[in-house]
Length: 346
Image (cartoon, rainbow, N blue to C red; front, side, top):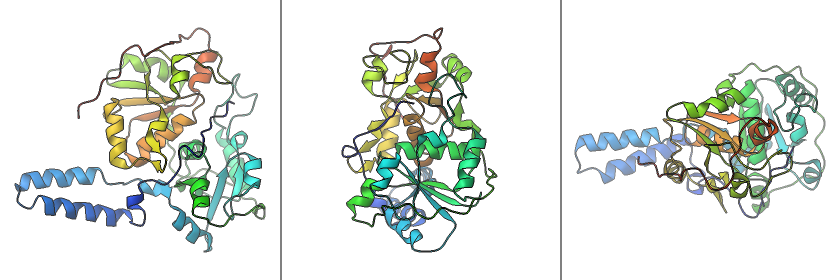
């Protein structure tokens, strides 16, 4: 499987620092109060419409993110939680968050003989066995982090939610932000937990998975789009990453590099993200399938659309370009986009 990594010094940080320290209710109430003050002399109907707009933009899915201070408090108290460091073993051994267990991509990707190409998600049975070794139960609060702006953590988050583990979140800022804040690091693995007999009993999310046939047919549908979140050089076919079998992209894809959603401090805030996706024509009314090289970067984009922006009709193409490029009969496009992306008027 091709390793999709970013320069951690280029994009890292915490989501919307202005909101850190406020819970959802506090933030929402303060936003409504500001609207009331600014519109006190306007017509009641205008006030009502803008209040409803604020309600619709409330960060209702923010429990999928946990900030550093809350995680530090959690570590200091007994509870049924499990912290997973989603990085290569050598990186983990050079320093990790206290209490974190290490898992890396081979642990949650398909075995070599499962598919004729690399990078696919592990089976539900394999994930159950992994969580059993980690002593997890369906009620365990699982916190994921990496040092790649949540990219690898988002891949595992997507698989866990896909199969039906309810309590799973991503550490806001990851290990880089943890180190910036000079919080404690450990260099030894925690004691191995007592093995459990894990089974997925939560709410599965099969609606977040796109299979090959769905990708083939999406462009025949009205109000449906296929989004490629790789780099421009991958999209145009200038480069081919290891693991892919051909240069190029799926014909008809629109390009939206996932790194647009972050800056040096981390994720852009909710309003910025909404404007960015709307400008690209990636709007919540559309049916959206996202892909990349192997479903990792696209899981990161799905996390944003689902958990920050509240989109409903979104899928991650697990096979992504690796699967598509492996099938010789499927077409591939290269060069500039077939049609320029037109800004969406909202």
